Length: 70
Image (cartoon, rainbow, N blue to C red; front, side, top):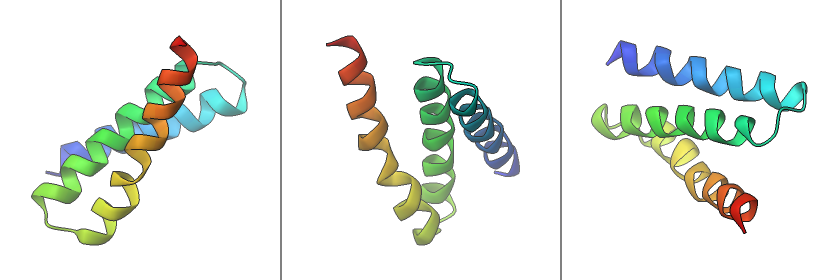
């Protein structure tokens, strides 16, 4: 379970870095992948705070990805 958190953290921080150096749309895909890893962690560890925080971010990144392709 700890590896899922570290992988998720890496992708979230990489997405934040890509946002700060204005690398679009890679920032959305990278950060979104980290959010998915953290949501999986929250689900399996039954951590409702983590699950709520990152679970609600999935549709936000989904809208960004859809917006990019349309």
